[in-house]
Length: 222
View (cartoon, rainbow, N blue to C red):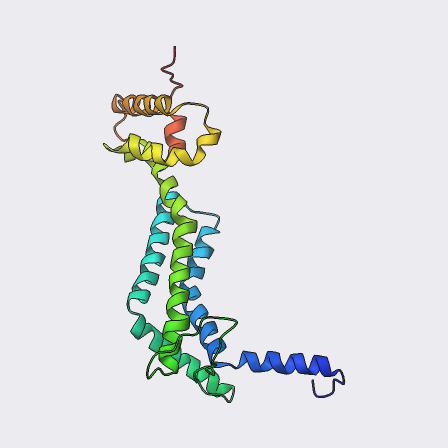
């Protein structure tokens, strides 16, 4: 940059470099790294070649539970992030300070509390909003997995008194791909259950492919 004679390039590079060592940027990066270190495990699992609905659902619930616990214990959690951010700033020859207070904010909402220090600012303006957004996004994007998982109740070994209701709630997701009406689906599910209740097999199939390979085609329609 020192040898570059283009003043505009030098100016932009200097502004970019200054932005990278700002306290709020350092805290934002460390907050994101802290949160996503847990979410990335879920991402890798869901993209793996071997998985099933019950295991996937359990993994999702486990990660969400961990993130919600961290959000609940935000005072403890933000101290760890702030300490790491201080160490990062020190390596860059900077210190963690409050962003400059301006009389008029035109780009973003500014949160200023009485006696607020840099750690409190990070907690209110960065840490809590990031956690809340991440948890909300995961709930929204992965809620359908929880619904679809009810289809596992069609597996004979998973039959329960709530099978029909739960399976119908999952089937709604694929409503456009199903030619049968809801009443027809209810009867087919009940017929499927009755078939296995009357089965002379000592143990019921625990996987859908085993159930399908050991059953004859049945139809209640006339």
